[in-house]
Image 1 (cartoon, rainbow, N blue to C red):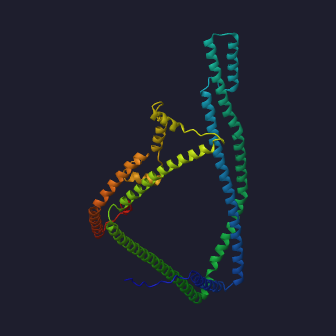
Image 2 (tube, rainbow, N blue to C red; image 1 turned 180 degrees about the horizontal axis):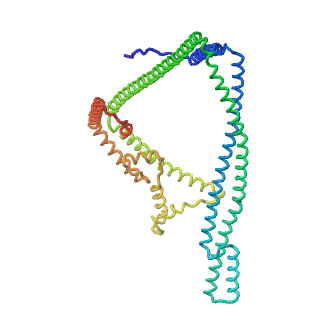
Image 3 (cartoon, helix red, strand yellow; image 1 turned 180 degrees about the vertical axis):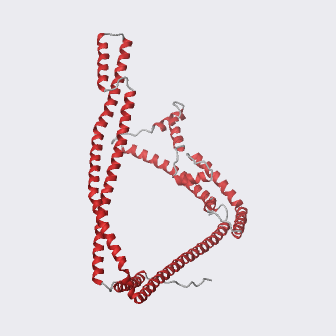
Amino acid sequence: MSTTVKRVTKPDQEKHNAEVEAIKKTIDELIKKRNELSGKFNRDANEKQNAERNELRQTLEKIRIEQGKIKKERQETFAKVKELQVIRRKKNDEIRNARQKLPVSNVKDIDAQISRLEKNIEAGVSLNEEKQLLKEISKLKQAKNTLEKVEKSVAELDVDDKIESLYAKIKKFDEERKPLSAQFDEVKAKLDALEAKRRDQSADYKSNKEKRDKIQQEIEANIQKRRDLIANFKTQREEYRNFMKAERERREEERKKRIQQEKDEKLARRFEAELENAEIPAYTEEINSCNTLIGILNNQLENKNENAAEEAQKEKANLEASIPEGAVMLNSKSEREEEVFFSGKGKKNKKQHNKNKDNKNAPVKFDLGVMEAFWKLKVEVPSSAEEMKEAIKTLEEKRDYFQKNSAEQTKKNKEEAQRKIEEHRKKLLAGEEIDDDNNEDEE
């Protein structure tokens, strides 16, 4: 029995925003009215002071923005200087490490040493000494390449010039900050003076205290109304989310129940199918396969005999057609040999005998499906007429065995099906999962 769930309507966000905006406009109007009462006395002077104060505040804001830009650029420039200093230290360390590994400290000294070693070789030395000198020259050339690469990378970076240029830029930023700081202090002093003057005039604002208090109460009431409206909207939205969550859970539960019902129906159909399969007489497929294969083999034997007779007739007809007009056709060699054999003057008809034997033992071919049927019944696939006769005999014996034991095996199949169904039902009652028995069914 399904439980009826009260549907919750989704709150209207646009309507809520419009209501909040309307309250905000009311609050702004009340604030404006309250401020007008506060500046009723000496309104002109108050407006002039407000305008001047706003102008000074805008000026201060512009100065702050400009100072902020200069400060940011100065910090970024200084950060670049630090990065270049780190790179310079790293490159200097690389050059120093490279030089420490070398017997000389610069490229010029390396070239001089290479030249000296080459002259020694030209002057004449032993073979071992020449190999040693060439090895030293190779090491010096490798060291020269390493040192040149490091020095070239340092020269390409031009770190010192870049750092000097960045320091000049930082100095320029400092010079630009000085007049801005002076201007800021001057404007701030004027603004502080206006603020002090405004505080001195605060006594004038007390003259309309009752009216201002009433307007203030209205302002606070509207502010509270807006808070309540927002809180109520949040509550409605939360209720709607909870409703949607419960709805999703309900649908998921219904889906699970539907799946379980389908699963139960599938199991019922499977149990019924197992019982129906158990009712089928055992070895029906094997008996049919035996009968089919016996029929195929008998046809093969009949076709083989007919084909042999047809070939003999065709050979004789072709021979008679090839004899010229007026000629006398002799008997075939096999016939002549047979005559000689019976007269005692010639050799036996050996070739004709071999030919008949070859035809008799000619290989037999079957389709893959037929071969698989033989294999399934565990019978060797015959390849000659003699083997086909043996196969027919074996198939007949297997067919008789299957027919004899069909009733008993059918009874066992029914009992096994009942046992499996009872076992599955016990598992279902215990809340266990039942695996799909497709593989077992195929077996």
